[in-house]
Length: 324
Image (tube, rainbow, N blue to C red):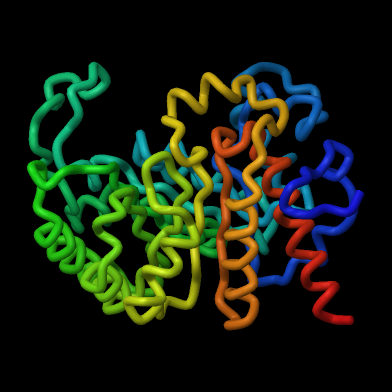
C-alpha cells in the first residue's frame, strides 16, 4: 500500500523490508517499548513472565529494521543504574542509539502536590538544574564503552510552568548557565512546553552550549511547524542534531489521550499535520547532514510503532523520489 500522511502503515509492514532505505543519520523509534498491547504485533516471542518481557523485549524491538532508536522514558522517574544500561546495550545493535530522559529531580522547579512526591509535594526543588547531581546520578551509569557508544541525546524535560513559579527570564538564564557547565562531547536536548519561551534568548542559550530544542507535539504547546518557525526566526539551531518527540494530540490532555487510546493496539486518530511536520524536519536533517532523532508515544495516535513506521515509510518514499 502506498502511503501519504493521511494513511497508516499496516501491521504487516512492521516486519516488511524497507528500513534499510532510511538514511543513516535518521533515527526513528518509539517512547519506551514494553507494552502488553504490542504483543502479537511487535512481539512474537513467548516470554516466561512479565519480568522477562520487561527485561528482555528490547532485543526483539531493536531487531525491527525501521527502528534505530527508542526513548527510555522510565529514566525520568528513576535515575539509571549501570547494570540496567549495560543490559540495554547488550540487547541492541551497534548502530542503535537510544534517547535518555533525564531524572525529573533536575528539571522540576516546584514539586507538584501529588502523593508520589511525599513530603516534597508543594516544595521548591533545591536540586533544580544541579550539574553535580547530573554527573553523579546520571552520567555515572553511562561509563562503559558499550553504553557510551549507543547513547544518543539526553533530554531535559520541563513541564509547563507559570511566572509565579519562576520568571521566564530567570529560567532561561539558569538554563544557559547549567548547559554551559555540562560535560562536553555529549548531546543534550531541552524540551520546554511553554510556547512563551520560544524566543531569541532561549535559542541563543541552546546554541551557545551546543544543545538543541526538542520539538514536541504536546497538548498545549505550539505546533511542530510553529516551533520550527520560531527557531528559524531566532537564527536557527546550530547543534549538529535535531530531536522531535510526538507525545499527545494538541488540545488533548495526557490523561485524555490515555483514555482515548488504551490499550494502544492500533492507531485510532491519525495526525497528518504532525506527520507532515516530522517529515519536514527529517528532510531538513538529510539536507544538512545532521542527525535527527524522532520518537513517538502511544498517546500521540494510539500505537506508536505504526505511527513511526508510517513516518519511516514516508521518509523512504521521499528519498526514492529524490533519487529519480
